[in-house]
Image (cartoon, rainbow, N blue to C red; front, side, top):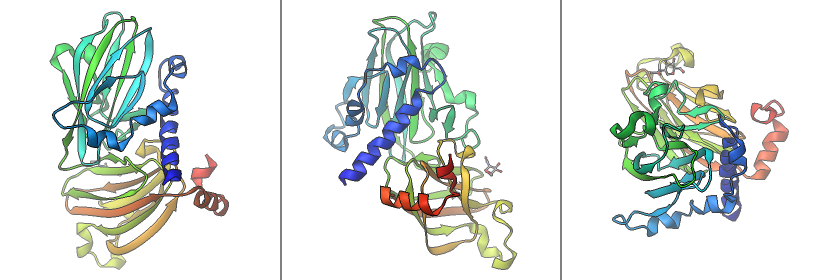
Length: 323
Ligand SMILES: *[C@@H]1O[C@H](CO)[C@@H](O)[C@H](O)[C@H]1NC(C)=O
């Protein structure tokens, strides 16, 4: 348990480090005085249980932050902060709303607070532009552009983020973060390196991805595509030609459209398929034509360092280790 916890933290820290390569001036992020332990203290699961529903949790927002609980987060600039970002995360079956409150920033002087519907890291986006229901420009909502018109922004999936730039010491704003049930989750980033999940796409023409930002062993236990009932197995078209299929993808970024395919499934089965994927990001992606009800169930657990080492030694060709 201890070991896993540490690896989880290391992975998260890796994510946050990627931030420093975000577009914009990275000097300020490198100079950020937030400590690694402070950042991870927000992940204490007890925190969530201890917070009574009627009382909103409150704390200051940092220039570089990671938030997995509901609450009010207030940023107050003590000096110019030109490149800040806060990542938000909820359960797979939740979406996140971010409200702007008590905003005192200098929009005309170049300050901004922008909510992004998803996560952006190193220019990579989750969900990828291909899989998100909104065009890219609509996924950014800027406080200064929308003014008082748009005080609340709701994400399409369980992750969202806020970028902000503040020039004047003393400027401040508060973000109220809430979670809401999402009855039809599509794209998801897993909060933890182990668990189980079922992607269901009920006769919709869309693609959904479940992203696990850890190297994991994944066990696909059940998979059914409506159309297979009508096809004798022999005449099954190749997966990509079938309108409905499941891909297992791997790589080091968060943009699923840039990951490499590990394998495809397009024939229904129930049983189980185990696979160890030594990538930083492992994704189960379902492509759905909209004609059928498609579902895939899987469970996953973190690979330990010995297993990773073995994969590394056995698969010299493995793309996750050649990068
Ligand atoms: C789903 O993904 C497939 C293959 O990646 C693509 O051809 C198709 O256009 C996508 N469908 C939607 C609705 O985005």
